[in-house]
Image (cartoon, rainbow, N blue to C red; front, top):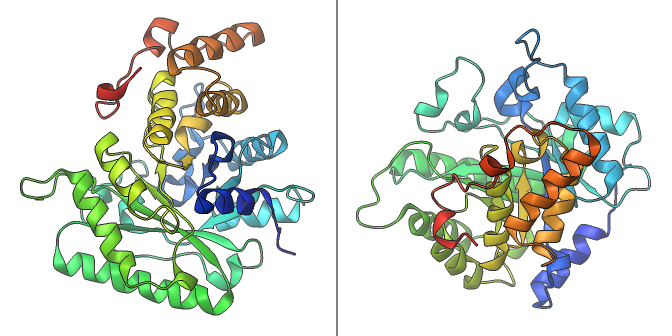
Length: 331
């Protein structure tokens, strides 16, 4: 039986209606790393140097679900099948979601070089199987300013929408920046991506539009432009990218929200944190104005000390903003 959550739907309604408040900000735990990173996405055992077993990943999912701090749990289809068999969503209002395509530009497993090339559309997960466990999925595209590659991606996305419409599957759209520099003339990559998204969706009817976007944060200017373009129909969300420092995590979610983002889907920033549940709890405090990003780093380190957990970096190191996109607006 599919989970019929209310928390995500209520928040989306609030955002679309213009009545958004920080408590309505949507956070997703992106535990779909196995779709791109293979076994290495589980992290490496420091003693053996080998990948940790998938049970480690599944345990982290269950711990986050039990906390009720997130609104969406995004996984691979194989993980969703396990979680469903164990009834972990029973009584939960957290929405299960499955990654429904795995284009080659997310193939980042050990020794792979696929990300050096333009994406080729691939869909491993079958929609009829996914629909047994959830009614929400993720579809990803990348635009390169290359007519042949972009047409192929758009046609694959159109075929996907036709099929999801037939079975009643909702989706959200992930739009990656290319993994390497592309020619956009004198225009910033973030503005190119904004226009590519709006152009892509302009011919898409309400019934088949994505619930929201998941995209790279390309700075305040690009975020503010896209978030203000059509807020009733185009809800902008950010992806987390690399793990970075704890300050990077809190700055990213703070800046995204400040400039109009309403969703954050973080994978490595949550999974590789010393305490995944606590870092999400602190994200909520940053979004809702209880803590500044700087105060949040200090609060998080205090928590680690009290729990007897060794931080990956010293407090001084963890206070650094290392993502260049975040530096101009860092507070």
